[in-house]
Image 1 (cartoon, rainbow, N blue to C red):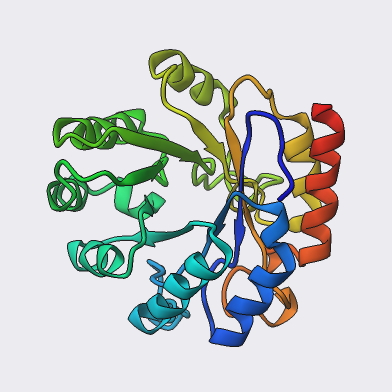
Image 2: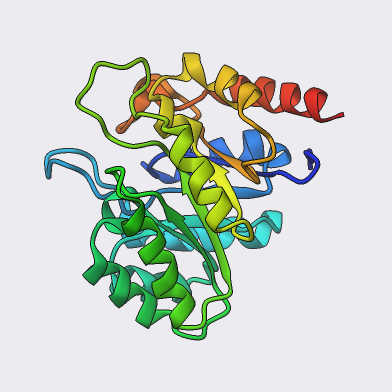
Length: 249
């Protein structure tokens, strides 16, 4: 497995679309990741948009973890998702940006994980309200969750911009000072919204701020059912990782 000093590398499709897509993607990148990501439930703006393969993908994820001895992380948005994730031996889960803005949902999920040995990753909220982000962290702290990481994917903005989401590096620095002990994973796929920006984003980020990177990778991005513009083809992903390795040497 490729290792980058002190940095966690996460990669995988935005959404699981079928078994072939999932296994093909993983087989092509598993030597370059520490954790495989796979969206099986997607909180979409419109009910017409593809929202993931759901529970039927969980046996595949459990099989991949056993076969390659690499953990798989998934997004959860309800307590039912949590129940199913634990049933199928998923021990790394994250809250999406839309879930983080809902204190009721965060509290329910936190209670469902009380005192469990789970690795929870909390994405920043879709809007630039730092209180919602820090509040979500505190809710998991209060129920005894020790393994907490955060994912930074920028904030929604109506202003014309280069990236899909506004970076607001100033707020990220504020967060880093307040929670110096909590790892931050940069999500350049969602932040940029376009693969053409991802390489420069990860090369130019202040390495002292982030503890890892989460990339969306698809075996055939042009045919992806969600977020195809921001999903890297496996070979593109490997080039970016190799450049990160060179810079870290």
